[in-house]
Amino acid sequence: MSAAAQPPLSNACGRLEAAWEVLRQIPDPEVPVISLCELGIVRDLRLREDGIDGLEVVLTPTYSGCPATELIQDDVRKALAPFGEIQVTLQRAPAWTTDWISEEGRAKLKGYGIAPPGPVAAGQGQPIRLVHRASLTKLACPRCGSEQTEKLSAFGSTACKALYRCLSCREPFEYFKPL
Image 1 (cartoon, rainbow, N blue to C red):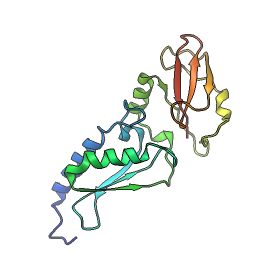
Image 2 (image 1 turned 135 degrees about the vertical axis):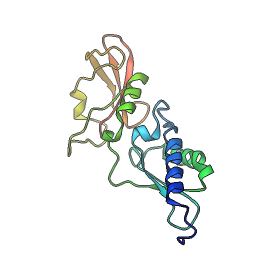
Image 3 (image 1 turned 120 degrees about the vertical axis):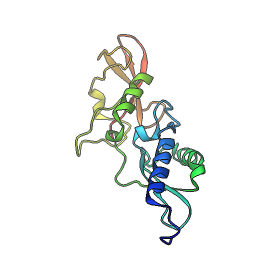
Image 4 (image 1 turned 60 degrees about the vertical axis):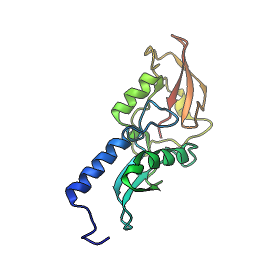
């Protein structure tokens, strides 16, 4: 794109900020209480560099086999359509980590009944497995706060969550696995 065809910088910055505001409103399709930005899936937003009027959105799926990836891409394209041609780029390296979930996102997960993951120290992340050594760790119930909980299943509604039950209030809850 020639310098003459490029919008003024202030206009470009305003356009990007408006697009970020739209992105902050797009809910995760599997946990609609949290936005894609709060979940840390949206990694970057920039003007397209290929001369086409529009934006490029860089997404990192929570894991490479996430079944919601295509739906997320479609939701992003649809929401940002007023900004021109939308290019979605999947960036799988570095891999998504639960550390990318914002504090507000963690609070929303807890309020929704999903125990949010704690921070993951460098090199301490765990791949999603059928048997997970972290299952020996007691989790606090997101509803009543009791640590008298038990793991019912390595997988909850999705592979990135596990199913637990609180022995105090007897309510089931999901735990977002730390990755």
